[in-house]
Image (cartoon, rainbow, N blue to C red; front, side):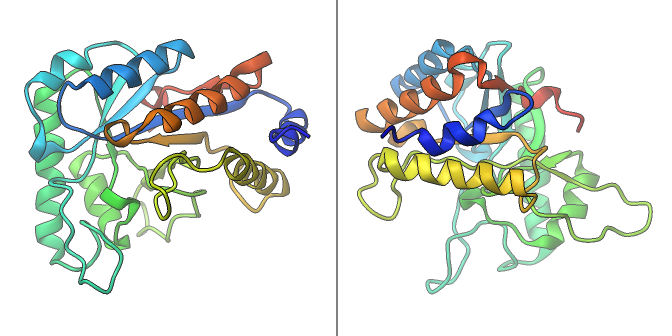
Length: 252
């Protein structure tokens, strides 16, 4: 039995190709790993959203990502953990005053907009995919138009009367076994998780309009992780099962 059997059953029930987007985190400089990422994306004709750490940005990255299908997102400020030792890592949860956090998100967007004026898309990617709810309104006022974390998006909390809502466009598929080997997750688990996500969308317990997001971290990929990414995308992109979404073209 194919590991993809349950995935294929769900895909066959879709009325249109599955919308898919690709976010890669922690970019700071031109590296051989970044070139491998770009080669992999080109193999599948996939647009890339590169989440860049503003305070660690090196000049070499500007030339390395200069391509119309590559967009730059704001990945925190320093990717620094401010959570107490007993809590999960986070840079933008309520462990610091709101004013301090919002000062950093404003600075991050300004820095990347200056470095990548034609490629920066105003989407905030909090490190470790964790952020406090009180950041939503300030992010919008600063010029951000979307937030990207991990997992199916939930209905946003009620906004003040007349206030616009910050769109969520999340990632859902991660090929890395972070809590185990830190190499590739078993393909069977990856496929099972994807099938469960597609079933939730079909049943209405997850938003069926949200593009499915593939999340990668090029700087820590070994060969097994790259192979897993290629096997996943090769299957999803075969026979017109999916269509790539460029996040810069979303209505944000």
